[in-house]
Length: 125
Image 1 (cartoon, rainbow, N blue to C red):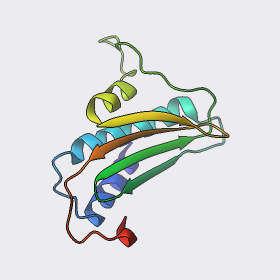
Image 2: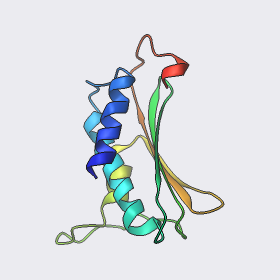
Image 3: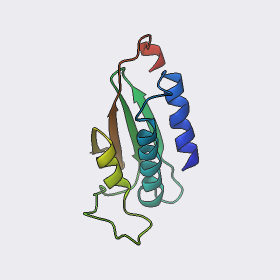
Image 4: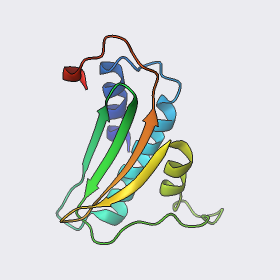
């Protein structure tokens, strides 16, 4: 999911977090959650929304989709499977993660704590 990763990188640069030690973890999580939304959470003819938020203490990744059901992390993906690891990776890499139901679909989210960066204002978040 190159476009999602580019968006994540651009957001981190705007927030002054370009050299953040956890940027790769967050970017991988963005890619996995966006891919899961496309494969499992988006009915034909619909899209998904990727939202990143930074409050000065954490980056929150949210992937909103309109598909039915709630995802679950499989116990362990088969070693020959190419998929089945998105939620497992998110759970392992993020400080917090979860799924929130909404009227149509769900939001899968993950939070990554960050160092406090001087000069970040509410307008840039």
